[in-house]
Length: 232
Image (cartoon, rainbow, N blue to C red; front, side):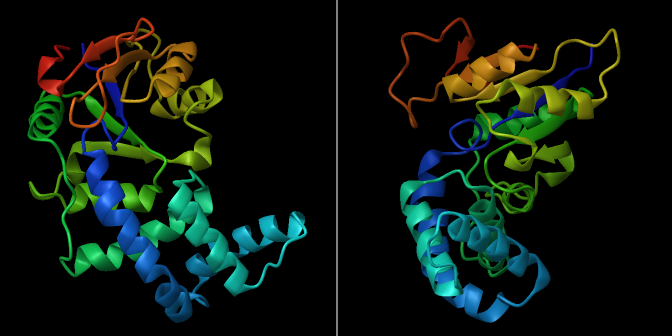
């Protein structure tokens, strides 16, 4: 039976190191110039305004300099902040378009995604990175573009990844029929898998030794160290 498969990116299909050592440093270095050059454009200004409103609500300075300082701090802290992720997606596009880097995807993940798509399963992404950043990632991988394999993308605008309600909203948008199997969510983060299971998703812990010390307690989630081990 064909099914819906929802995947995380970092630590699940791509290495954590690529994000931490390539994308984050690039964003931190490029962000000041990006804001200076694009700060008046509607999409960039939208997210700068979100940040400014949050700072103002906390009785903190909220001009562009203060927003930039807050964004730089969030990058250092790896904050899962929707405005930061959206702005990162916008400026990462420049780096991808210029060929400054290509997204890392594990070979076993490439093979699995292509096989699942060929077998008629519907593939989706749910990541803390913005939808724009997700699309860029899969359109510019070391293995060429994988973008056409996916039927849809979700980010934290739909809700936090550790909140069961987020997965309930995703399931509603997948438009599953009454006889369909429960959707499958694949991630390297146990708290995300717990939330997905609470929303009636099947779950898979992707426990890659390249990214994590092996977890001895999978909290009842099926566990693999490579997507080549998964049989649908």
